[in-house]
Length: 617
Image (cartoon, rainbow, N blue to C red; front, side, top):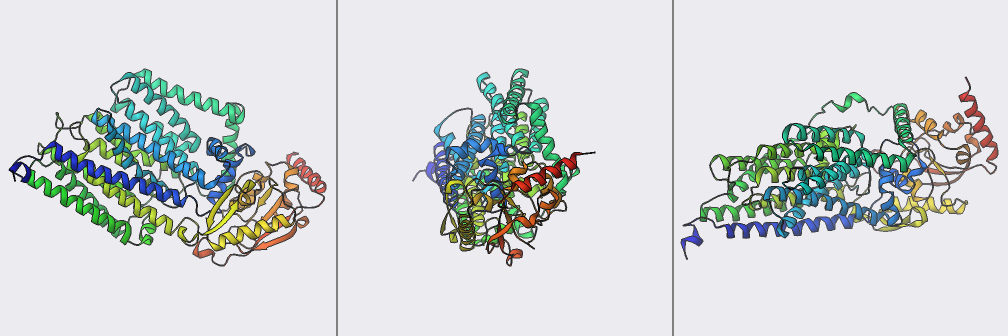
């Protein structure tokens, strides 16, 4: 056998490409398998808290006149297109996110390679599986979080295209950046502020983009926001009233979310085992890049094949042997994708320093490095404004770190081989995270695999979901009580449990005032009163009540008295065991259904009188 094949010469471009193409194909298959896993999970589980809030918002967003996030309006067409089918809407949301991630990574690969090919698309879709980290807690439903991620993916795609060589590409990038900015504001205004800062730094200091494209991005964002304000609230003035009202309600709730928290950096809760794994992933990623750039034939092949074996074996162990409970406790586990990016970047820097770079210049252009750093900071823009741990929320948007890796590592001559092994590692990391979410779904008891009891729920019983026994029984008993005592679809229902907007939606009812009367906060009672005052007295007097006396976070019935609605007029007609979604709630008090008064006109008059008295000086 010739030296050319055994190591006497250089590793040819063809053999390097063959190895890289095989790794890309493997990663693409894994990516599709991971998407299939999310597809399966979309038909199972139902969270009564956050998800219930999302579905009430999307079902009828125009019913609420105070909101900081407008995701309900943005997703309402999607909700209508699927007739409220929760499982299919979740799947569409996952596909949209995956497609936008693929588009962003495709733009990044094309920016690096300088060409368009089917292999570019395959590489991008292989990396796109990292966006599925956003669903690692089992929350696949559209929300302000998924809208913020999708908006930032659009904006990142536009930012990458602004660095293109062709004017048309730069103009298209400006439009995408503008649309992404508007959607970010609609999802989370704080994320939009962070996006403006990052894009502004890149445009003004790192890459002098022509003013025309910059102006296009600003005008597109402003026009989209203006049209949206007219569609939702009749104009900018009405939209500002909506935002101001939401801020006033938030201040009444006193949830501990302060303006000063926006710039305070919390602790970085990375466990010792995760730190060790972070270091291991970083080293392996660095070695794999060096191996891919090796110029010694036999040594190159040996390092490639050994690296592939290590990636497959350790990845399989990581995603299948490590207990799902470890992943669920390691909130910063998605930072392993950052370890891949950092390690690969260090390996590429070492190769260039040793003269092994395949780039003609031997180094990346400074503006490309600047763009890589901006993309690396996008997860922080996603998390900016959260009242949870900033780093844990940022980890949800880990999809931007592979784009950083491509920018830092790849060159025009060989954009694929250097990240091929890292792609396989990334797929197994995502697999471990998804497996954890399905074994320990957010605010659900049991695993998603145990959710085998089919339940029809929502307006028009439009959704069929697999739930575990306790959740299925609670919904079935509540539906039976509601039907028996004359509750009709679309009737108003006041949720005083503080944590069950999902039951309101499951019964096909409407929530007056706000989608979720949040319980458990210092100002929850005052928040309930202020929110319900936004609803007509006729609606409140005819509303059914969902209560959980003595429950954690429950709101007392007496809040109705403060609204001029004597609570003793409501009649208890049903009761069931509330499902436990956390260890601390294993012995929850039963939930109750209360029927509105038979003659509500008396309550309406009393409510109106109370409001008139409150307005009088």
